[in-house]
Length: 352
Image 1 (cartoon, rainbow, N blue to C red):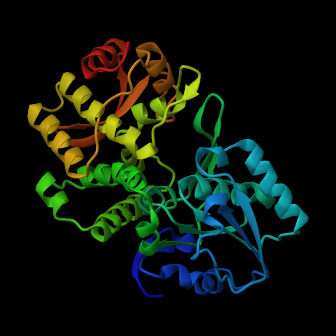
Image 2: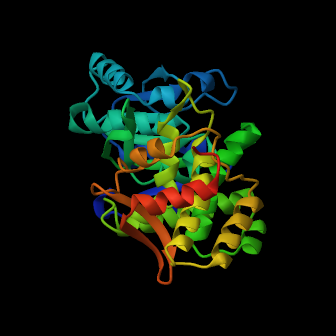
């Protein structure tokens, strides 16, 4: 394979994340190398991508294509059932392979369907969005949403390979680039980069930095027993924002935009708790600015509703739990009082 190869080291389940221009053309090679007994493939692709000029994918096997909705609409239990039913009709065996082509929602859906069908069949991800390339497609965390919250039904199921073709990024609208940059700035902060160092990175460098950081952390802590939880920095508030509805409608906010808000909030909460000083807040704000991100809560959100949603976070143990910076670096901090969170949210603005 050509392109930059970043290993995720998990003993006999290790695999490569390949980053570069044109690496989507290595799909058949990746399948042949990692699933030599596969007799057929199923391509799971979002509807909006199906008719793109670059949407022809050669798997090297007889292939059936199944389309799924775009965005979060794909991440539902009904879509999992739909895919598994189609897999069954096609008589896929445990030797065959699913290929998820799309953004993070599609790789989450395809990965989870592959995890539960026949108690697990192989999956390869071709990540077409920036947020999928730097986060969602890597590491084996797959999930769909329930009406009570995001990513509440899922499984750990590592792919055979992840292909991050940088050519796809040239087709994305500006807002989708910002969406991915929310995850990139998180990785930069976790990796100790200063804002001037961040501003010197090309988009390709940004992708590689995020991929390398996530691969390194997943290799050390696949099941989120400790270190991997740090990748949830900024996500406690982010997931709460994404889960809430305002005025009966879902908020028009992308995942990376919500993460940016969550990062700005988390460092302010850390300051309120005496873990960091004003300089850390200023550095976070400058980092967000470097990537063109804004940390403003949508107007009119309920503090009570946000806190209730945050209490359902997967890191929580019937309390409020956040990943926060501090004198010893980033840590998962449990037992944070509701009143402390309320104070910081009120000062943050945009809530009632």
